[in-house]
Image (cartoon, rainbow, N blue to C red; front, side, top):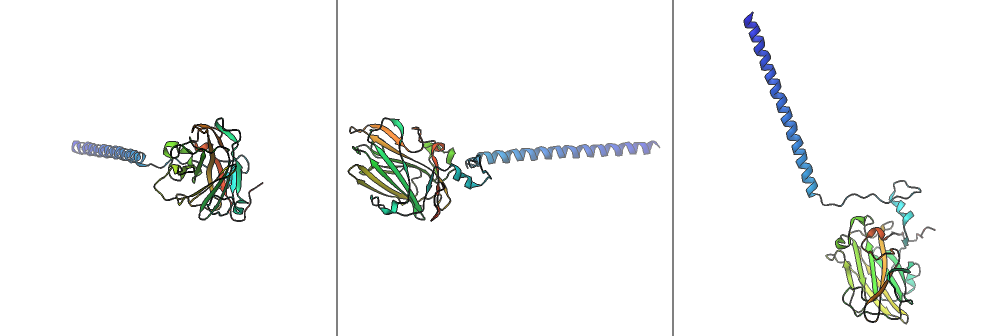
Length: 276
């Protein structure tokens, strides 16, 4: 009887030991798995370089989560059309979207200064025309500098470019300096590694100057229904080469690096008209 009891006790001890070992092994395995998962997560966190996902702006009315809701907050609707970049405002610009740069952004521009900006697009790119009224056009400054009379054009091919900063204009976000007499910089800020097939033409007029410009978006090809971010600025200088003021279209501040202050614009399909 004692042998049987002893045998049973020994068997029970072995079973307990085996269970304990198995339990320890499971805990170790679980700990190893957790550690491995943490290491994997850490590795992902340190190697992922893409910007955070940002939801599209939503409107209060008719919001169904559609990208087309951006139409409700668009400030400009750019029609389909083509132009020859020659510095002449011809009939091809008759149906372009046109806005006035009538907002003082910096200091005091000359009282007689007035600018209208027009835009169109086709499969070959974006077209812009700036009709400038300014009795004293000055272009005696340095390359791309705002101490010249000239246009600063802001374009982002990506409407979700709200995470970008002035020092890191990346991808298809640009500042173009359109200044006559060889002082243009295309771009002044943005991706300089790609060929934008830019064309510019400058014509002095009795009342000021006409600037015509086109370029081919590289990072996001133009297409009907696309949304862009955009703004226009004119730097107005004195005859001594000092900027007296800046006027703009949409952003009323002189903080031109904040893309959240740029306007949302939409490219219309051929034959499509802007909503009322």
